[in-house]
Image (cartoon, rainbow, N blue to C red; front, top):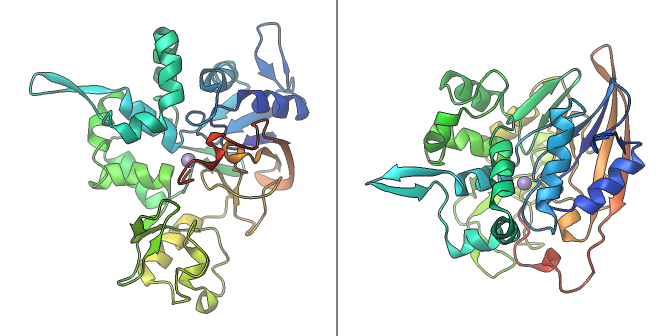
Length: 337
Ligand SMILES: [Mn+2]
């Protein structure tokens, strides 16, 4: 079996089509991309929407492939947000969205909302599809998730009846998981948004907008064999150089990192805006496939060959962003995936 695991797309459908072509996929007589090989499938790590220009197309290319058995996909945090934004529940006789239609949220989702104005039916159809995406996949020889594969959280979601046998959020569970402070909501957040923790007492940094932050997102896929030399400054992501001390990593953070790396089946994920044309293999068991297409970077794929349940080979392919260098969303504010 061969899997072409494709990174975060964020509306960059042109680059997606270019990447698929480069990987040897072409449209069949129904206009659906296929490898033409029943033993070769595309796998999408999520984040189809927000930021880039052609979000309906990005979803529909993947949707058509999935519905025809040519691909599989998992939900990214941007699909989670979009699902919440477009799902309403009744409160005190009024319909309210599970994700507030605040200025900040509207701004983040603005390209999709513009497209929705022109074609609300198509927007609804696409939201209905992303709401049914699984939170993770366990395939022959590989695991796929948007941000973090945490078995404890998965068990919690299973026991709590939040996800079905195909790892999809049950239709009646959206209101339950909308509370990110409660355990089930936090579990969904962990899988799609990763490990974000309070920094130790007294540690803070200023983000790109000058806001002082006391929380950090953790780079969990680092070598944990030499824990003594692992320091906080090496694992807190997206902070200005020198703002985090080279202090020991607190035990609770270390434990979450160990959980994220647990298991013998390699994990492929996206979410964390990486630099460079192709993904870097930092540890063999966990490979990030997000090369920052929405920041003027690249859209990448890992072609993974699996035989007898084991990964035999990994090859990378990527295409460059077609976005103009200046004046694009690429430079807008914080760059959290
Ligand atoms: Mn993401």
